[in-house]
Image 1 (cartoon, rainbow, N blue to C red):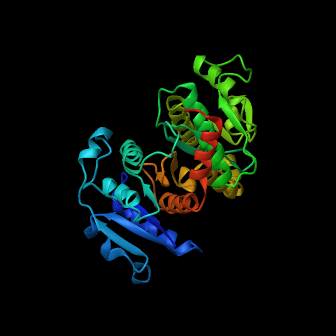
Image 2: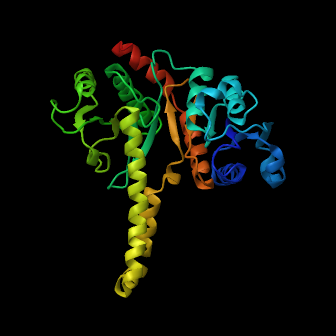
Image 3: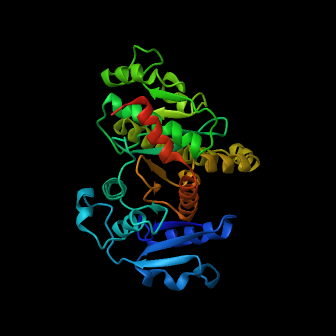
Length: 332
């Protein structure tokens, strides 16, 4: 039975979605697991139903690391909920962790306190993107590393390929390098050098462009954290804008309103497909224990799915596979 540590105070909305998501995960899961909620128990202890109490432990932490604070300050805040959550995993009391708190603080603590997989230079944050065929593509890095060398991007390809195969269960993942054109000659100096290195990977399909992320022509997309974070935020903005534009134009036209009523189910499915809550959180790949970083505005659905992600992560051999591949390619 796996134990997942949850930063109960992390995120913009405090303990409420973290507790509700935890309870929903326990209710819906066919696999038994335990949860350690880390936070100020006075805000949620009385809300835990008796039937779930046997699967939940609580570690007190009244200090909350703010979303507007500098990530470098978190090492001094050993009483904060995120620090204590990380320590539970580091000490072997939990198998994985979930946090919707300060992403930079979570990443820094996980890297420094839990440690990197042997051979990994820089862990990467990955995110799932919906494709037009109903599948998912994995993009990394989306914010952990803004300035990268070719060897870093090469390792991201290994991290992404292994996560797709071991955790997402994608058979023979296809890996692409994000660039401004498909030709080998396109890109900046870093991506051109990376392209030459990635040729040794059988899974490498070449350069891909932004639209390839959504058309199911590739399973893993590699980029640096600067480009990846802009891509992620732009995609979230487009998804939100499309929904608002549809609603706005429906209100303007009685005919459109009639059609919208008939298309309600289609709109509902579309919204679900582009909703980040359906994917849970972003795995930090490359550290020794499964770490899931959630959106600060995560609701209970996102927390539930993040817990399931953490369990799937913990139930794989990904870390050993990553270490073996990096040693095989001798990239350090």
